[in-house]
Length: 504
Image (cartoon, rainbow, N blue to C red; front, side):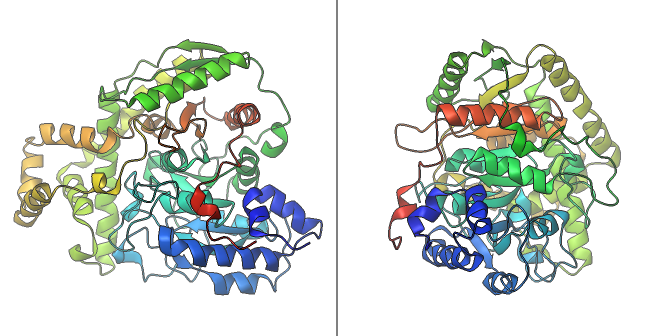
């Protein structure tokens, strides 16, 4: 069998692996198609910032065994280290420093037989909900090149949505799997804290707020990836109990009649676009039609306080990362203005401030836990609006000049230490998180959450909806997603760009 590009585009990773296992197609044929797709589409999308076709060709000479044997994949250029190649984290400061060893995620993908063909673009230090790093340039959404694919796993999402690969590595510290999945019409599951190891180069990312997995076009691919990637690695601090059966097998089971609460109001009190509201309400109608009990309700927590705690974690983490980078020889000019702003705010806070802020995460976890005693899942928009245009993500020139002056003069740190940055920080919270106010709850509470592509806007743009579950409930989330996928299929809905110019 010679696989056509169209057949490749219509298949998910699970199907491609089955074809290779059954002898219908070879790993070499899949790599040839994926390479051609990469060369055709990446100049338009800028989804991949480091190609690994030489390494991929070498893989063909190795015995490829496992559930992903022969399947071409991409990994994210953040956290997911590939030995001998740099993990740039979207920054000029790290783009030439090779990783010493594979991360657990990369090693497990290789052990499962995957053929990794490149690393995907991400904003600097994976800090933003859009993907436009100065080091590598803008990544574009294949559904509309004038719009963002989201972030920080925007390169992965753009590549999968456009059909370069069926699945790509991603991680989520504030929505970075769910946001680009919602922007690009993909399925994105963020696992519970500790379900997938981040090491061995690190212990936890962002105090455990970040989790690794993939973005994919099908639910079963995400379940397969979770089976491949989950489980503790040597030296991990704790382990989550494994499911009674593999996640991929749990999809055969009906989720049962669930109690699902939904809310469309932003926890920050900011605006929510009518399309985002419509996405949730239509999802609620579909859930009710499937027999679930659906009510309007929300957990009782202070959204502004959560956003502030989230940003304070950002400040401290960025300050620590840049301190390490400077010790290794990096210069201020190697980092973007926004990153240096976060560093200054982190350096101005005391260790006690950081710890007190981190302790407040427990308040949000207890509120969500109490909520889940009455509701199995919590449904919200993933994004507060459809994918934004690239120009909307650019900091105004006047603001850039003002912040540059404050940084150069050292006044920013002084003002922060004097407690005179409260209003600017509140404004920063609203400015940075108003587009994505719904996703950080799962990160700070360590709970699993998913974005499901159930809605397209009147303009033809994807806009996913989010479900948050209790800690360790990935199997339940996957079962519901599989049910929704069967009721309202999305996998064969491809952007026109994916098919334009494709060779038969």
